[in-house]
Each structure stands twice: as structure tokens, then as C-alpha cells.
Image 1 (cartoon, rainbow, N blue to C red):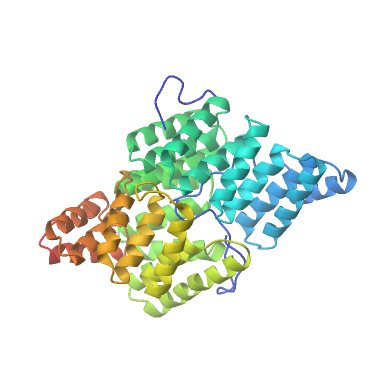
Image 2 (tube, rainbow, N blue to C red):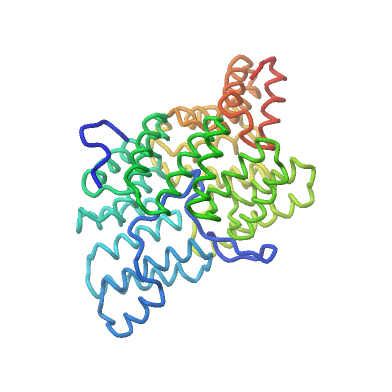
Length: 436
């Protein structure tokens, strides 16, 4: 593949007790859709294990097994794979100190556990050993994104694109552009990625990302077509099912959306999916069923933490909307401090900033919340929920004109961004005398 940017300026959780299902470790919930794994091992776990029994000093084999364990944890939700991954990756380093495959694997493991500073350190070490390592380059971009260092993430993605282009890098490049508010460029990059891709899985993933861009712009027609294309290419893909559920709910097909949501949480009941299913049930008047989904989502954080995962962002988001405001604020402050230690308020993850703003609001601290809500919306990232949060905080502070502007902006951007929260945004806008 040619680099996309030549001559151009561009950009599980763990198994748990949940109605007979498993909560699965996944990618950090800040991003709307998980980035496609880079450099996934070609051999399955069983094949690698058999090979290593015959060649126990094969450092590359141990590193591949570690990467396979990280991926297996993401896909299956078995928490035993994370400690196994750490063990075999360290074995790889013992067999060959400093090998880039093991370091990249440790970076991916750290990212899966939401230790983004650790992921960045391992990625840098891996790239120092092998500047052409695509897996390490992808981990590095992911870590910088999650830490809110969007300028650095853009530079890292462009560098990776120049060194070893491919779909994992292209899609990360597009997401960084989207976070910076450069949606047209993000769409262009994904279009070029689609033209370059040949594998059905890659094409399906690209379709989901294009669907996300359309969804965030409130373009239900385009979003629905992209999610349908992803499902055609990869039947049952969860990210595409999630997108289709949102589009169905926005179009008033509550029964269809509930069917999709039930299937998603049956297969991969992450807190984000459980909360969205609960909110859809609540909006349909099925509050007892919604509370059951919320209870499972709340249990997720305890299980995650027991398996070495930092779940403060998920805790903050869930507790703010459906639980304990004090717990939400503790978690949100901890997550913000972790992702932005000693950094200015303008240089942090928009997701961490939004979570802290909303936790402060539900705790009655709107004056403090305002600056974080402005930070969350300050990059140009088109997220209707962020703009809704800002407008509600402004309304609470008596800033009626600003509240009208931002609540109306959220609803213009995506008038059906949530079956539960969009009607509340409309009610809040009515209270300050505005129209969408």
C-alpha cells in the first residue's frame, strides 16, 4: 500500500456473572469504535503452544503467543488471558532481551488494561528496536490519543503511515483527524483506506468508521447504509450491530433496536453496551429491565479492577448517569489526573474532560464543571452528548444564551443522539426558550 499522506497534510471486559453472559475486556470506552488490531498473530493459540513445546527458546513464538492471548481476552472475555499474556511476553524478553515483538505485545497489554502511560513507554522501546513495527506504531498512536495528546498522535500516525502504511494506521489516522474536528479529512482518509483494502474484515471495519462519522453528524441514511455494508461484509460484527441499533432507535424502530441490543450484550456485555441497552429499555418504559442492565454494568468495574484494569472512566460515566454522584466524581478526578498529570486544562483527553465535567455537574459543582465541559468540546470533536453536557451545565449556571446555543447545537448535530438523553436535551432547551 502507498502511504495515504504522500505530499498531503493529514491526519472485555472479563468474564462476569451477567444473566448467563460474559463481560469482555475491550478497548477503552472513550473511542466510539475500537481500533482494528495491528499485527495480530497469524497462528492460533493452540498452534503456538504446540510449536513452543517443541521450540521453547523461540522468543518470537512467545511474543506471538502473548499477542494472541491479549487478542483472545478482547474477543472471548476470559480474564485468565491477561496474566497469561504478561507471563509469556516476559518469557519472550528473557529468551531475547529487548526484542520488539515482546515490547509491542506488552504495550498492547498495557493499553488493554488502560495503562496508557505504560503502553506509550513500551511502544517507544519497541520502535527504538524496530522502527518498522506496525503493531508498536499502532499502540503508540492509541496511547497518545487516550492521553489527549492529539498533536503528538497525529504526528505519530503520519510517521507510521510514511514508514509502513496499512489499514490499522489509516483508521487511526482518520480517528485522530476526527478528534481534532477535521471530519472532512477523516472521511477522505477512510475513503482512501477503503480503496486500498482488499480483505472483507478490513472493509467492514472501514465501513463502521464511516458510519460513525455519519452518525455523529446526524446523517441517519448514510450511517445506516455504512453499518449495513459492514454487516454484509462481516455478518454479526458487534460494532456494526451497535451502529444499526442506534440508527433503528433514532428512526423509531424500538423493537428492532432492542433486538440488536439484546444480541450485543448477550455476546459482549461491556458497560457501554449495557448502559445503552438499559437506556433504551428505560426510554421504552421498561424500567425494571433497565435496572438489571445497570446492575450488571456496575458489577463490571469490580471485576475489571480485579483483573488489573483501570476502570475509572467507565465508572465515572456510569455512576454519573445511573448511580452514585460521589463515586462518579472520585473516579472522574482519578481518571483525569491519571491521563493528564501536571498538564494544562487544554491538553487532556476530551473523553476524560467530559466525564469529569458531567460528574462535577451531577455533584452540584457546575462552576468547576464548566471549564472541563469547554475543554471536552474545544477540539471540534463532533459529539452531540458532549455539547448537551455543556449546555446543561451552562443552564444550571444561569447562562441562558450560552445554554440555548449549545443545547440547540447538540440537537442540530444529531437530534436523536440518545433515546433517553436527546428528549431531555429538548426539554432543557425548551426551558431556556430555545429551538433546535
